Image (cartoon, rainbow, N blue to C red):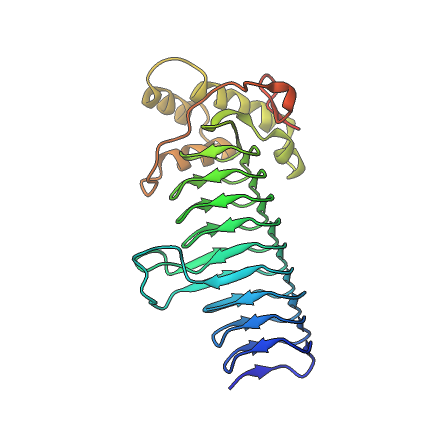
Length: 286
């Protein structure tokens, strides 16, 4: 039997299956479809024509706009209806036409999008993705299966991210980029195929990182990704030279993480710097 809090407002034409749980203060617009295993925490708003399917939990205060579809089966030919999950963290905004698929068999078991995220129109989050808190996916972003996106990252419009890629915390991916390898924390990637062209200075400043920390990060970035010689030797040098520097240590830990399945994105230069993005000399995001 469904549990619908008495304070919830449900428009005519909304279809709520037996077993669904609707929290206090939720607003369900016309022609929404809510499956039997769906849980809406308090204060969720479904504007209209939203489809929620499978074992899906929507966090408190989320707002979901028309024609978004969350928790539907994965686009994975191995999937045969096994019980998997989908979760959207609190205070997230999901715009028109977004798709978030539940996990596949043999994967993580749950597709997750974190708290305070913004998924712009027509973005796609495939099965088993793990998207952190405060992430922005711009219009028409495509995340393949099993992609990890760190907290506070930004992925520009039309970017395509290959399955199993990892994008580090506060990284920035340019619009229309094709990302086939892992992006380190704070990195900025540009182009098709995507290349590492700088780091996300503006994003870091907005998070309260000091100018002194940025100078240290720039020195480490230059050592790791711009100097010549064997990468393993440069990595060892960075570990010794920047010991105790938390931002650099986060990059090094990402690089050394044995669970990563792809190589690091290659360094490069912006082919068209007049388009904006990052100043290579200063590492400034536009």
